[in-house]
Image (tube, rainbow, N blue to C red; front, top):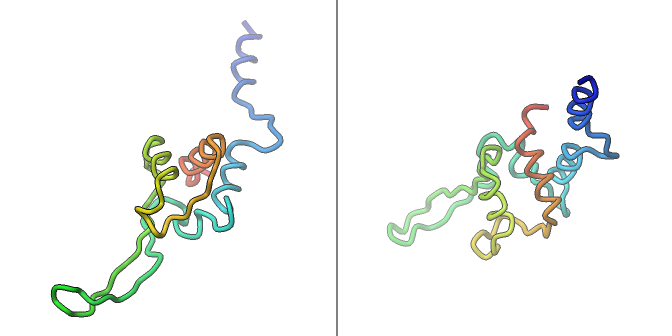
Length: 117
């Protein structure tokens, strides 16, 4: 019985050189040049990353536009993977990172736990 208690607790300990959380944090801060943190901050709320003015074609007036990085800490894994692997022609702002499946899993794990640290 003691063995079972020890064994179940031992499986929860991560003895890796770098934990999944640490690896995910590294990817979040600098995955391939520019980190997620630059636009998404801590991931728990939308962030305005740019403001610009543009002429409205209908009214011919100058209107302010925003580029907003959405909150990402409550997105489902499926939606996260979909966005990370999406054809970037639909978004001219979100960079392509070419992350492996393991990197994406670690990054998602970090995003879900970033505000629990």
